[in-house]
Image (tube, rainbow, N blue to C red):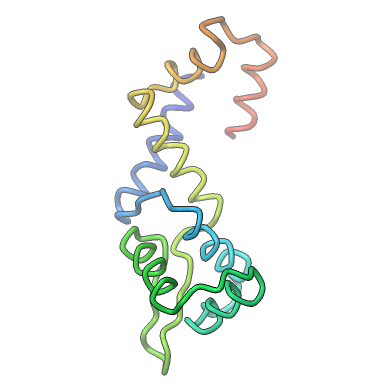
Length: 143
């Protein structure tokens, strides 16, 4: 079973590394990502739409420069793509929310457990052996 988890996490890590994506963001940056994820079926969002959402719907009262800084950080991390082929720039999430969550979990695994699912599961279970039921549930969940 551990081999199955290891393979799943390694595959996601390869996808993220190939795209040079850093699966980490600040709480403020996550507000922008949440907005883009909610509207992922659209053709991206313009800066003014993002600013309107943050300031009018979320009542943030942020200046253009602040929002532009958050967007630039997200672009630098590979989390947002920018389409400049239109009159104004359009911003789109580079990963789905599920892909981001998997990448973040993989980062936690690598940063805190030396990339070892065995070490993670041991810490999670308090060093006790997992029950057969929990082991089966985890296997089904990962599939």
